[in-house]
Amino acid sequence: MFSTLLVALAVVAADPDPFSVAGPQAWGERAVSVTRPDNTTVTARVYYPATLQGLNRPVDPSGGTYPIVTFAPGFSTAPTAYASTMRHLATHGYIAIVTSSQSATFDPNRLQYVADVRGTIDYLIAENARAASPFFGRVDTTKVGASGHSLGGGISIVAAAEDPRILASATFAAASLRDAGPLGPAPPPYADVKVADLNIPVSLINGSLDGLIPVATNGQVIYDAASGPRLLPSLIGGYHGGFWDPPVSFDEGTVTQAENLTFARAELLSFFDLYLKGDQAAWRRQWGPERLAAAGVIDSQLDAGFSIAADDSSLRAETGGLATYELLVQNTGDRTDSFKLFVEDNDWGLSFSTLQTPLLAPGETYSLQAFVTVPEIPGSISDQALVSARSEADGGTRAWTYLTTAVVPEPSSWVLAGLAGVALVGVAIRRREHRAVRRR
Image (cartoon, rainbow, N blue to C red; front, side, top):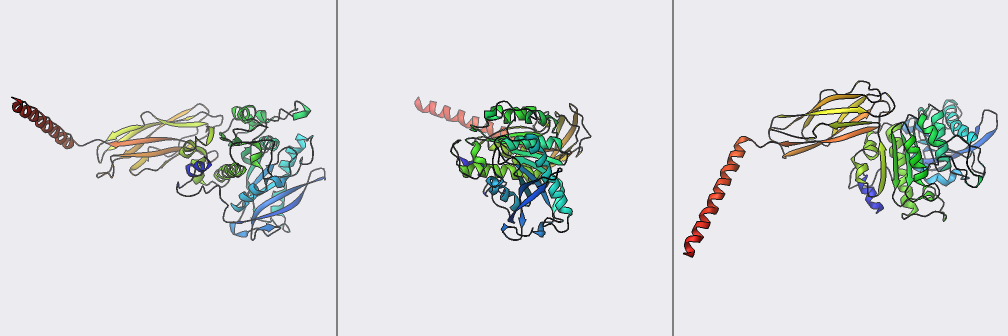
């Protein structure tokens, strides 16, 4: 079943999913000490593109500066439990930092945990400016994403809601933070409350068979409360323990751990590539037809916060003629935004009456037209175009629709077809008359 995912979500169907395989750079890893405002310290691990693979290697200068991903581990879990996924990010040009804030306790201080996640961002920004640092001049301090697993997933959502430097949030099996397990109900903050203040793209990556942090009472609740563009992709058969490296026995799914990790890495990387690097090749996996094509492997809910639709998505035009589509872009989200228009996958010419909408407040709509020109000598009798609108607020979120244009047969073709039909009817009548004469 899982191989279907790799085919369905590949940019080129015949190739492996480019987001699931290691990137072109070597990974480096080093342990660091992060100083808090009260002068206490907490350790963290940093994973980064390196000149050679291994511990404490120099940062690879060939990629210039690299976006930050801050990652919060799950309940009582060490940063090294996520090493393979963090190394995956590093090979694709990210600096990932994983705090050990609450890794050695069964009674985590959640407020301290949130502060320490934010503190990892402070640390890398400071190191970027420190001449003696191995990260000097190598950090893109303007591109920050937040991630985490389980308890850490919920914590990272809270941290993102409190830190405007974070531009996108993608989590694994994020906990709502309402349950402290054997300690009973937990005090605030709650991820499903804070996410309403988080008007940035959010992807709540889950496994459908998670027995520890069930999707229905955690990921779904957070998704329902989210205000920004939101995704809830759940690997069918995926499970809680499938998101970290050490094998676990308390939680099982119907996919292997390797399959669960491959899914997690590809979802995380494509999401951050779209929102932190502006890689438009990733939009179709996150929001486009490829997301729907994987429906048998990934159970996805998604809400871009806006829509694009045609009054009539299927029209006809004569060769050399023009088909005019009436399009409506509607802002269904909670933020004022404008939207840029794009067309892909078409062979015939398509243009728009305008390439960008004005700013639309929540609930507002904007009408525009799309024009498809049928070639004088079309290579086929119809053409389908993938038309999308992209959010200018985040530069990655898209809504889309298909427009299908067909050729109207020329009048001479109709005449010839009619004459041919009459001739065939005449032949049939003569044959019946001939058979009748022979019977007599």
